[in-house]
Structures are given as structure tokens and as C-alpha cells.
Image (cartoon, rainbow, N blue to C red):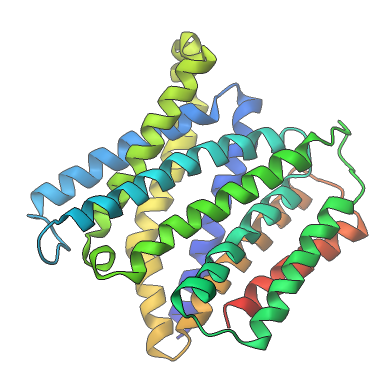
Length: 303
């Protein structure tokens, strides 16, 4: 069980890299969309090679029309995730990174509510209390005084749009698991479909913004490759070596429901510590209250 706990904490902490990269990229003159374009290309290439060389590892049954719709769902997830990360990056240039990250991570209330309303997931009072705590935290984050040097309140609008988009994409990513066609689809195919959505969307955003004219300079930047390499390294290696074995270990000890709360809580705490001690953001009492409410609420709704 200890392996499972430490493995999932490590995975959650690795997720903070996404927030760190999206916050740092514009400061290093690297477009977040280009990072996603490069990362999705790596995922598609590696996934295709593994799937081909392994003879379709993980496939159960035939690839039916239902499988096509599942791929469409994951493709849309990748599309929305790309847009969300770009908005999050813009918000982080204007407001408190730690609070923005917490707001967006709290979007897990959407798949939670979807499961209760449409798929018969049991509604417990402790989960209702957790939901109320998250909503209270979001209200507090909106009321908190802006302690950033820019004083630009636009970050709140961008963060809450990203929050809503995250809720929708998490619902789309969760729906296939409720159906046999989704559960039977290889995880590699799922990742390729998701990465394909991110690839096309990030490419479109770069072309539409005209920033493709500056690709030469950005491609030569060491920071682009540091960002892509770090995200792909931890994303792929941790998923295979820690994420799934850790979740299995927790389930074997009767603590499977604690897996996602543990990872999300650790990634929120890890990113908040990064913001407090590395980039030295100042936080108000209301912001600390919002963080505590969201963090405890996330833990409770997964109990």
C-alpha cells in the first residue's frame, strides 16, 4: 500500500509540470500552442509505433462503429484541452498562478455530477458537502483581492472559461468508460485520438495567429525542447511505471476510491508550493481559504 500512496503522490506532483510550463512558456518567448503541437506529435508517433510493433496490444474485440464514436469523443477532448491550456497560460500571465491552477483542477465536479445525474453513481452526503466546499472555494477565489503586480482582473474571466472547458472535456473523457465499447478500446488508441485533437487544434491556433512566421526562432529555442521533453518524459514514463501500478496497489488494499483525490490534491499542493516559494506569489487570506475549500472538497467528493 505504501508503494501505491507514494507512487500516486509522485504522479500528482508530476502533473504540476503542466502548470509550470504553461506559466513559463510565454516568458521564454515560446508559444504554448507550439509546445502542444510538438508534444502531440511525439505522442502520436510513439503510440503508433508501439501499437504497430506490439500487434495491437490491449485491443479487445473488433473495432466497431461504437469505437469510432469513442475516438471522436477523445479527439474532442484533445481539442478542448489544447484550447484550455492556451487560456490557462494567458490567465497565468495576468493573475495568481496558484489560484488559477486550483480553480481549473476543481472542474472535476462536472464529471462527478454527470455520473450522479446520468449514470446512477451513488450520491452520499459527504460528497454533497465536498461539492459545496468546492463551490465555496470558487466563490472565494472570485472575491479575493488581486495581489498580482499587474492588477489585471481579466485573469478571473480566463480562468473560469478554462474551468468550464475543463469540466466539459473531463466529462467527454469519462463517458467512454461507462460503456463496453469504450472500455474495450486500447489505451494507446485513446491517447492517439486525444493527441490528434491537440495536434490539429494547436496547428490551427498557430496558423490563425500568424505566429508560424516565428517558428524558426522558437524551434531553435532550447526552452521549447526542455518543455516538450519534460512533459513527455514524465507523462509517458510515470504513466507506465507509477500511475497504473499505483492505482492497482491502492485498489488491492481497498483504497481504490482514494487514488484520484490523492493525485489531484498532491498536484494542487505541489503547484501552490511552487508559486509560493519559487515565483513568490503573495496570497490573501481569502485565497488560502479558497485553496483549502477546493482541496478538501475534491477529497470528499471522491470518498
